[in-house]
Length: 339
Image (cartoon, rainbow, N blue to C red; front, side, top):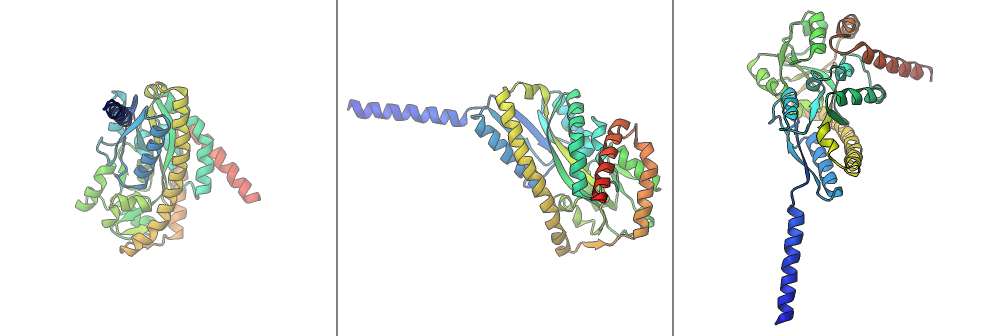
């Protein structure tokens, strides 16, 4: 009888040890929020990243995710980071630029023409952004992407005049977009991203700006049924952690986290671009009309952009970051032209 009893005791102890390890609370838990809806490519990829970090740190580093804007907009998320209620987030460019204005520089309307230009400029600006976020107590882990955004409206917009007659939305706290809109004679309505759909439904605004995939996951396409088929600008975001919390990790844990981020957020970039491509057909299948923009009007809008950049410098972003962007972009375009 002693052997079976001993065996049962060993098995029971083993069960409790294994169960205890599996359900043990991580030594470091990061509470992360995002405006991205649960089930979207952004949240799905983040969960894959989080699972890898937890696994490779032996369960010592974990993440609790709050998607879909349940923690408020970007500014609210940042405030909650400041008081320790959150430890990081997936921020939109518009929202976090109220804290680090230079982060919005790539969103200048009608500036970047291709993803090749986006990638070259982004690579050159990352070290500058990394330092600026660190100065604000944040660890910049990875960039995210919404993609090229388009003018989406309840009525077709093909010309500058039609755009000027629209009731356009701009994100709250986005002086860059507001300055550009004002320059072309539009008095835009400022709203936070979670308020856009209801404002389209009530008629408070009739023209909004989003990526093709973003318009589907946010359901904006259900009201904005016309898309001007020329990108208005480029939208992106960033995954940030509270620097004090990040610095509590061991060097090995930090390396595991960053390596996983480099891998999964690179995959996220590819998935986001793929989703935007596939979304065109989905939108067309759901009755959305793509409107061809008048070439003359596009030239006019680019001229407006050039006139308003001096107003943006020093207000929307610093002279230094704009000169860095312009230098990288002009060099790339010159090399491409000569090759």
